[in-house]
Length: 164
Image 1 (tube, rainbow, N blue to C red):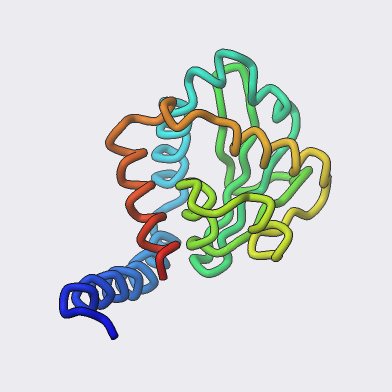
Image 2: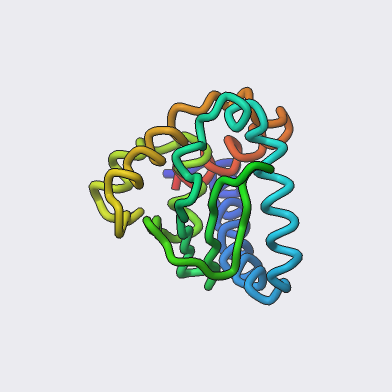
């Protein structure tokens, strides 16, 4: 039996997840130029250290398609001389697809990436070797490369999602 506090926390979490399920799909209505600007700047700032170290050079002249079907979002990512670049369309070498909740669990390290892929909650299509290398690269990134406030919120949101 749940205590009153547990019920309140659970209902708050459920309320937040239901709210996210309603609000996040609205992101597809944001003009692509705004999405690109926010993603490019955010990724290049947050991943500046790994980018300088050449960790994302495997994406030079290659394209990763990130597809989030439940949100209706698709982005193509490559590495150029200025950093990571986002495009609305490209010929993808590899596609990684999954719903927003799975990407949150991956980003917040609340679920093992191999489990997400093995259970096909995240799917790699195309150049599987490139996809697995990218998965391992993302998993190996130190959360300290992210701004503390961002990691704290990612971790909190992921913990809340994983607890359900």
